[in-house]
Length: 492
Image 1 (cartoon, rainbow, N blue to C red):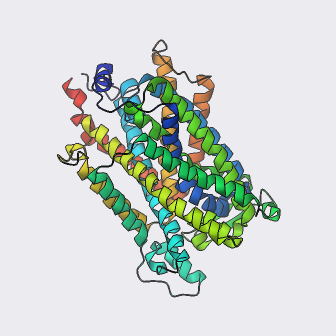
Image 2: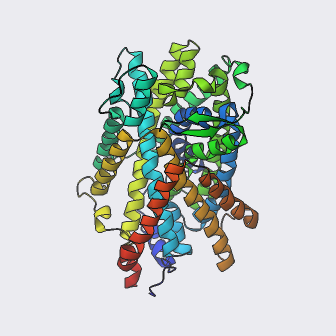
Image 3: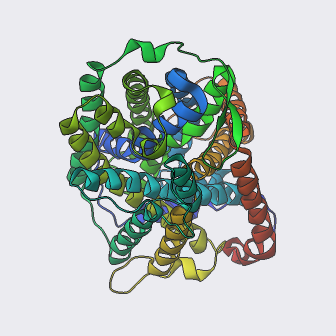
């Protein structure tokens, strides 16, 4: 095959993968929708609602969720078209490799690596916040320098008149990452019914927050609904402009992390009964359901607790802290326990997705064989899983949640923009290709998706932007030095 950066993986290879599928096709559209909801509801709704309200939008956080949701819908519609054409595991990476070309697929895959890795780190820090709150309810307090990264620990010490610690790490985040890593290395088989139970638990907790919290809303906390712009000091000690319409849009970029997860549906193609129809349905349905829940939770949270008061530990467990503030400890226990359990499943999904992307890229020769080595007994890619666990645990232990979530959002926004662009390119190149699901008004939806996602990307924290851009540039170097020469397509 020609040594072109735009060479495509043959359709015959995908057809062989589908034909040789060894997974049981047991999931219908609602089971797939449950997987999407399970992947989406996690650190975003339980944690980022606090950071986005305090540092960005104030009570207008609900508008940030609407803006982010609109950008996600554009990407979801484009995702659905690809999923209906190529119902295979691998998400956007696999779609691009079979339709647009190798370099495009590599860029998306490299962005997905950033998305899933940073997503797992963010959820680990989120879990730590809720775990600390849970053990506190039983009278146990972990020293602040063992439950915070160095920056957050210093800020905590200054706010409470304590000496800045010489050493600090987020120990709970470190330990939970290795627990999840151990589970993934040993192998985990979750039936659709088990996943549905987890989703029911998390959705029940969210609905509980909305209904019960509504009785404790103080309408004065919503005044003004869109606060006047002002400078706010972030976790890293740097003052940045917040609130007003700029804050609403930067808030949309910051909480975009809350929406990642619907693409997890596409990794379940091998277990779907009718993937060409059910996967597009599940992607869109899970996104719409979660968007509505997010808007309602953000309104309740900012109504129960003034956005100015969401500081310190409240940034890591804002929903639980809001109920604590209004004197409802029994509700705090329910929410904290549900969030603590639910976030573990989100970490599993993120880290599992990370290793699957590694596995797919390694099978195509774009990454070393190290990433596709499967343990003979456990039948899992154990080496890459341990490597992912090591990186996630260290970064989550020493980095503030704001930077982690912004880098996750960067990877997600970039991948979504590329998917929207890929759909447009394929419509132009191969207009007659069979498409069981077609993105409506694609020449409107596609460009809007690209513009919206890149615009939100530009509003992310500048430090996170620099790290993320550095990651993408590194990806180009790796591709042209290693991956292009090692690609399996060279032998075809």
